[in-house]
Structures are given as structure tokens and as C-alpha cells.
Image (cartoon, rainbow, N blue to C red; front, side, top):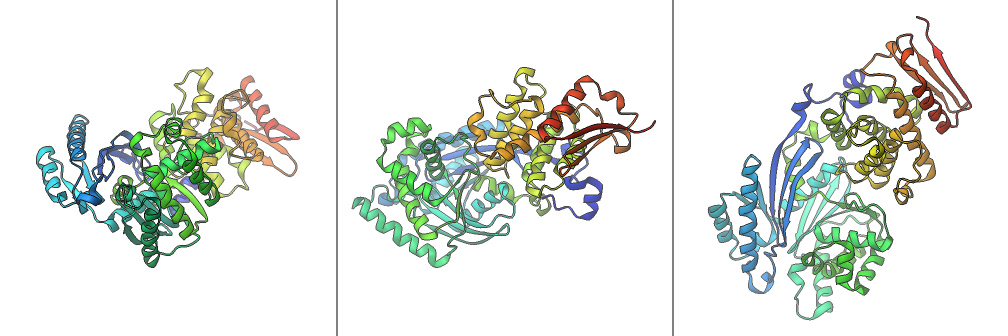
Length: 518
């Protein structure tokens, strides 16, 4: 995943060479982005690892700028007042955070309303913000780049729904292809005369025009936008799904179709409260559901994935050099976390080399999780010892990490839980374990117990000849710990107990310790 070439591999192994020697140089300067949408106005302040930024601050105001615009051709007057107040607040917050000038973009409502240019000038005059009004194809491109922030090299179709428009963009091997915009935002046809039949006719007509420009039947569909996320949250509620992280939530067409029927039958207020969806957002869900039903019928996706990343993240991705875009967002975020929070930054790589013999036949997909776990193995040391295991699991499964699917979150969480705890029963997380099979649960336990043991054998980035290493033969079930004379004193009673616990997790039949001569 790191893709840094042979020389980097020889220097740093599968971790790849860090972009900069100074970890601080790899930190993202805190930056703020404002998105003036047809339905909401949002400020996001990014911070953290440059390749996998954290959300330092995130605030959204449901202004409804595009409400009523199909009839009047103008922005909603109340929405304009609310948007101006929100933007003034956001700009004041940015100054208080000592941010560089906010990057501010506006989408469908602002670009199409008769009074859009005048309102843009009013915003700039009253708040000092410079507003960039983007067209539909640019909106689609930025949304697609936002998806690439979390899915490097992704292939599929991006569908970004806002209040007044819906954009599609193709992704092929991490490159944005054709883009197209449509008038399929729910605000635009919410009050369409003729009711449901008229809406269906409008949706199908617009969808037919989209397929003339982009036809990617059967590919993966990435859904971007608040209305899609609300429907995904309802899908979780219907399925009693345990992990309420929307990013990288996966669905298939049959499940979504069942959820759309569920929404149609449900009492929306009851459903809204159960799913913690705002009233303004929930009012659009039935109309967005009608669009989604036709979208699925038209494009017949092989898989549906929710992306919490969109235009705002796309703006950040726009500024990244290609060498940074090519990095694995998960590993980069974990590296940053280790540098910031671990007691001994850099030890994660040493630990990875130590546990690697246990995963000699694993593919890259598994090894990147092993890397991530080793980098994160000590970042929760400040938590109370009685709660470290739970803290680790909770952080891994709920953290805002890109490049990490839900089953991968649970695997990583279990490995880190076992870094501090022998048993996973009785933790309160049992419902999550069903997202991976029993073999993966056992593999996560092995990784966790190997880290738990390995963390006792070094207190620095020791060279192999000065420390210890493992030999594991899965065919003979033989586990051997090789210790140098210098490392032998580290193998005390607690270390021995942890080594034996690892051997039991591996179902090892032969277990021995070999001491090299002094």
C-alpha cells in the first residue's frame, strides 16, 4: 500500500519510507473549509496526519437556502438570514482558532438562483469570506476526490446528493473520469404538483439523461451526502446493526430496497428519534428514497458503500501532492497517532518485525492491519489500566479513520483489546464480534497476545542480533522464542506467562525458548 519503491522497502521494510524525517513535518497544518449547500451550511476544520486528517471541528446549520427555489427562482429569504449568521459565526471561530483564510465553496442553490450572485457579494461584504461558486461537474469531481481520500485507487460510481442537485462521477483506478449533474436534489421536487406519480416521472426522466452520459451498470456505488447517510442509518436501525459508523458502511441492493419499503411504512417521527436524524434532514428522506430506488434499478450496483467524505475532503485532496495521495490513509493515521501519543514512538515498527513470523502467509490486506495494530499498540496507555482494553476497542471501531471497513475495524479493535486483556468475553462488545468470523477473531487474538508479549522484550528499537525473535511453524505447530544473552533478563515471570498465553492462542504443540550463547 505504501508504494515507495525497492530502496524504501530495503530501508523500512513493508512500512515504506516516511515522507519526512521530522514527524512534525508530516503534520497537517490546521485548515478550515466551508460548504454552502442547498440544504445546509457546514464548517469543517481538519487537523492531524496529512494523508488521513482528523476532524478538529465540525459544525452544520440546516439553512435550507434552496427551499422553494423551484417555484420562485430565488434563494429562501429565511435561509439567507440563517446562512449569513452561520457564516459570520464560522469566520469568527476561524479567527479564534488562528486558521488561515477559510476555503468557502457554494453549490447548486447559489449557482442557479436569480439572486445567487447578489447573495455571494453580500456574504463577501458582510463576512469577508471569499466564496467560490462551483458548477455541477466541478462539484462531482470534488466529491469523487473526497472518496479517494478514504479509498485510494477506488473504482466505481460516485453519487453525491445535495438539497437541489445530484451529481455522478466515474472512478477508475483512483482517477476521476466523466462527471454529470442533475436536478434530483429532494428540495427541488419535494413540492412538485401531481404527488408521487409526478415525482417518479421527473426522477425517471432525469435518470435517463444521466445514463446517456454515464453508464456503469454493475460497478460499486459510493453514496455521498446527508440524505444517503440518513437512509444508511435507518438501514442500520432496521437490521439492528451494532456499529453506528456510517463511513464505509456496506449494503447490497436487496437490503436497501427492503429499507426503502421500511421507510415508506414507518412513522417518520418515531424513526427520526430512534436514528437521531434532524427534523430538517428527515423531511427530505422520503423524497431521497424515491431517487435511490430508481438509481438502484438503473445502475444495478454490485455493492453500495457509504462515504462520509465528499466535497470538503475533496478540497483537501486537491492540495495533496501525488506522493502523498498514494499513501495508505490508515497506516499514515496510525503513524501520526504513535508519534503523538505513544510512550516510545518508533517502537511499533520493531514490534511489527517481531510478530511478523506469525503472519508469514498473510496477504497485504491483513498485513496492513497488523501494521496498524503495532503502531497503535501503546497509544492508549494514559487510560486507566482497568479500562485500557475497552478504550482500545472503542477507539479502533469508532475512530474517524479512512481506508478501514467495518470488519477491519472489529479485527483491529479485537487485536488491541487482546493487547491488554486475555479474554474478550464480558467486555460489552460481544455484538460487534459477529462482523468477523471465528477464524478472524482467533487471528486477532493471536496478534493481540503477540503484541502483549513482544512489548515486554524491548524498550528501544533494538537490532535483531541484540534482542529476540519468534519462529513459528504452522504445520508442526512449533513456536520458538530466540533470545540473545543481552535480551535474556527481559524474559521474566510475567513475560513467560504472556508467551505461554500466546502459545495457547496459536494451539502450539511444541513451545520452547532458545538462548544464544553470550
